[in-house]
Image (cartoon, rainbow, N blue to C red; front, side, top):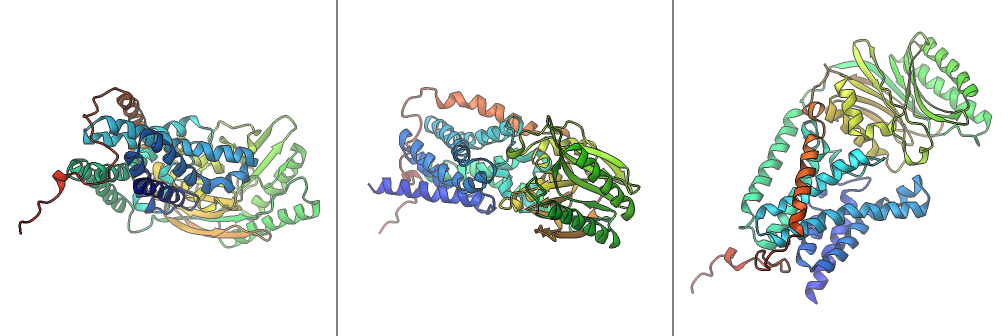
Length: 491
């Protein structure tokens, strides 16, 4: 009875830890330990009990995002997404338990991190929302740990984050002496990653480049907005651009999809923004949606200081509420005052492959109009900044219902403020620029993740291969093996 109570307590504690560590406001240090209670209860329990307790913990962990999902899709679908979000935890812990239960080798501990790397890599390449909930993004607010993504992408960070609790859990169950070599190797890897992270981020910020301005008004110009109020929003944007230009801004970025309109109305706004850029002598980025009745396009217009439309970038990756928009395929880069700027829109920067493509094209900074959902403002901004760490560029991201953020190529926040309803919010900052920063991830991409995926697939049969019962030690007792206990002193 006491064992059952302890197992349930571990599952509940682990579920709450997962919720706090990997939610929209993640606690970065907790992410290194949060899976430990769930792993312990799974290793201690029978297969059926382990399945049930892991499922309970995973559902508690994923439930923290239910309200956020309900902002994107109808509640029944939000509930389904929440349940599906629990499946990777059940898969990783379930497969790892089977392998550990059948093999005495301490290196069976690698099953858990390898399976998580495989999940992360496959989601990044196959899922329409990519690996949005990656374990790696729990670290996005702590610069030293995320620098390893410049070497091998999010998979490298996922591997370390998963390896630590796996080693600790198996050490508790089998005894520390049995796990001393994997434990020492894990400690060495974590320390090497931390040292690399601290050394990679320079103590002095990169040289200051162009003065950039950002402006965002949370009010969306939709079909139900009165014409007078819509005009007020556009006029306020014009005032913001004029003020930022007067303060010295050479580039100004406005949010994503300020309005969605028919082609004729959009043509009028294009002329208006063209005149604004010409009048203020700035490079102006404007997010706009165009619906011609057959196709919808989510665009970022880039106007040159002479008013010409220098780029007409079309968003590649759509958020769930805009699945009916047509995705773009082209990349846009422009050189302004010696700095090579790339264009992207909001969710595009959730995709590591997108950031890597711009890094390979030697972009030094990204101009990113965005539209967040309030609750995910910090998460979305930090996730996007991680693309710059991976692929070596600074970022200027102006989000409605989110944050206006300028970050450097190491993920450091140069300047940041929150958006607001009318009259909105503005931000002015010097862009930290440097020569195009080459990273190993630019050259190798997700090679490490695919290698881990292959290793995980090779390990899968080990969990279903029949072995004698005596091969592996029992996984139902937390007591330390007698061999590892110190000898009792004589009287």
